[in-house]
Image (cartoon, rainbow, N blue to C red):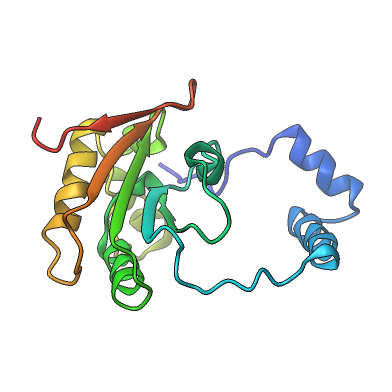
Amino acid sequence: MPIPASQPSSPSSDSAAVRSGGTVTDRLIEANQRYAAAFTDPGMDARPVLKVAVVSCMDARIDLHAALGLELGDCHTIRNAGGVVTDDIIRSLTISQRALGTRSVVLIHHTGCGLLNLTEDFRHDLAAEVGQRPTWAVEAFKDLDEDVRQSMQRVRTSPFLLHTDDVRGFVFDVKTGLLREIDPQD
């Protein structure tokens, strides 16, 4: 089964790229030039003001700063497919805590996640298509709450992290914008 290289783009993103006379990346670069023209150095340190790292899915429907009432400089935001705690997430959290002073970890999965519909067959199909097995796991899951619990456990038991007492997990509802906290013991 071939793996789709990308999903069809939406008409709005296509038309925006056409309006700018180029690709979506060209549009982003143009937007950055407008941003930089009005930019002033906020004089912030790289250390998050609230000493928190937020791990979330990369889903484009989740505006973490708005959803959590965060401002620039408040937190470290670490995102990947599914918001699952992988070795690379542990690497980022370790640097966040040990080098940049964070003490709390917030984990956010969400309803309607694409990883709910994938299996490890995705990796096998990809290997068959490109002739090389990916070195990474898909980390697909069937139960959001259980995967949040597993992610909390991975953070709490990592020997590399200094602060594992304030680790909380949530499911973000993409229809209502509300967070639902997951009890680590259920």
